[in-house]
Image (cartoon, rainbow, N blue to C red):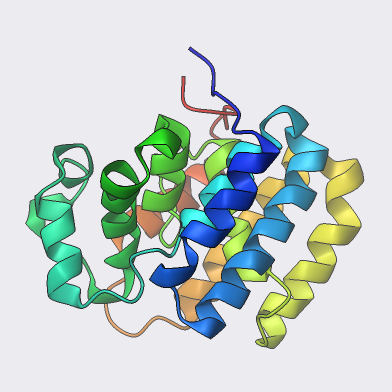
Length: 211
């Protein structure tokens, strides 16, 4: 069954509903990710633009929660918990699976498999990412409020290459994004991130949405 696209009214309402979950800076970031998702969706999958915008608006809803509360959300959600290796979550990325659990509990009308998975993997990626997931993952890294030089450079490159390069340009940008991220990680990287990089380098297929 395909994605049920939310209406524009639902997206506008969602923009208001997520506001209490986010700090001022995080809300500005979230709106910027929404805009970047809309841009990439217009090129790669315009039929799912509003679903991608919904995923963007929901991607950081667990960010303000304490680590313990994030873990509680993960433990109490069977769908998300199955994806957590050995019951452990790196603290810096725990808001992502916790956010997926919160989408299911607090925003069930938006809890399609694609949106839940995009929120779940927006910090780490995963092997065999869909285009839907990849757009949210990349938008989170390159959105215009990011000040790091590498983010700004990749933003420019994506806007230059995506219109003509399509999925090939998306794959190249994802590889660069993950390689940049891994260079700045202290300690052991999340296994999903490494698997995502290996999968992209192998040229594994990227389906549009979860099949």
